[in-house]
Length: 193
Image (cartoon, rainbow, N blue to C red; front, side, top):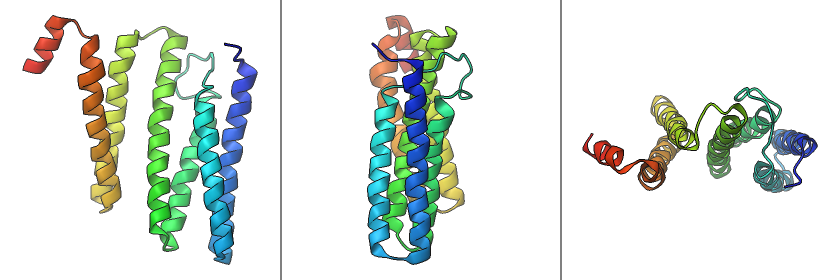
């Protein structure tokens, strides 16, 4: 691969830029309440999602620090932007758009955490591939649990359902991928327990 550290900085800068553009457009829409501005905001969100997911393919940083590096931090700006825009849209009565951006933010966070774990385990050498696969299930389970708890506290049905969907995805991942990595004896013990 001809991927360089410079490429990652470019993709991180684009992620921050495309976190700001749709958020600024949503802010303008909340002030003007003009449908054309809302359409532009939705298009900007779509482009931001494409840029983010395209940037995920170029996820690299040599740092051994998990989460605190120039790859992870800029990309979290997009996640925060999606969540902020979701709040603004819901506040203005655009619940479908708010729900969509909320879900998109959580999916982006789950993907970002997976990529960061893979990057960090490779850069640090502290985790084997099997350990990283199992740890990812744990990290996603914490995210799913947080969604369910926040959904219960705030009486937010979408977050509760999203948390449960994440748990189902984790369960499938554990059964299909994580158990497949275990030796037969450990697999049998895991099913017994």
